[in-house]
Length: 135
Image 1 (cartoon, rainbow, N blue to C red):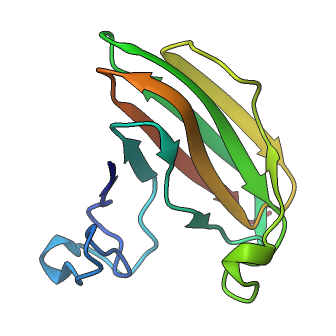
Image 2 (image 1 turned 90 degrees about the vertical axis):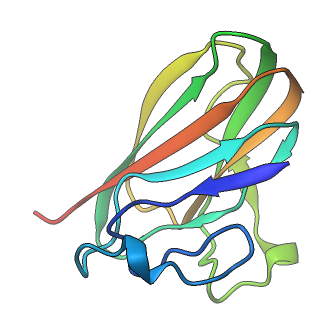
């Protein structure tokens, strides 16, 4: 099962059924950090990033202290809004790991990011993403 946690101030946020969540809007800025949570093995939703003005993308993965899991964080240079999902080329941003917390920085433009959990048992994984924009 894949679930999505909404940032409080993301006007474009939607819940797992795709419904608008206007009650969570506090400002018109893009909500950061963006969170994606997985409760079973599989691929989390792809997060569309601002590849045109971003200097870096920081991402962390935290796992529950109970249970076991193995995951890879994947990135894409293809614009997710203009490339069909079948044609997006995903590459590993991290090694396969079972650590319950990690933080990484990707320097340069990155168009998309997602969490790929290959094995999970009684665990919860959360991917947090923040972009650095500007001079």
